[in-house]
Image 1 (cartoon, helix red, strand yellow):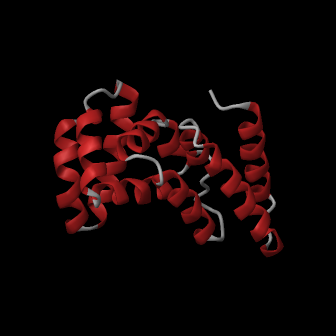
Image 2 (spheres, rainbow, N blue to C red):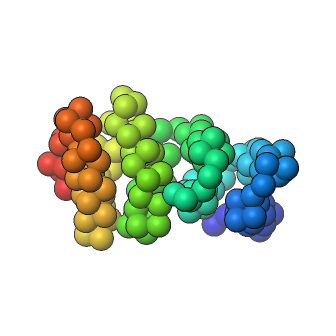
Length: 152
């Protein structure tokens, strides 16, 4: 469970995102840095739900992803999988980006392969839909998602 102080920081970060203007960049970066310093693994799930597909500033969403990716691969992947199925429906664009990054990283991919069999039915369905949509965009991506789809 995320400590109260960290949860407050995450809520402040979400408020900055919801009311973002360019003058709030340093506030965003400061909050994200403080959250990162907590090193609480539960922040991964919390930060996943901070991602917004319609947010104007992709670089800030990538900052959140980079913070999440700073955790050890198997933990990072495990925590992302815990956000399924909701994350795929609330932010399909960013979840596609995150999973593409996982597919492109050998250690992260191995973690995904090892953990995908433990997903519940709702998680499997959500991940399958996401990967099918990703594969329909491009043959190179299809080649990458097919091995995981075969496990689902």
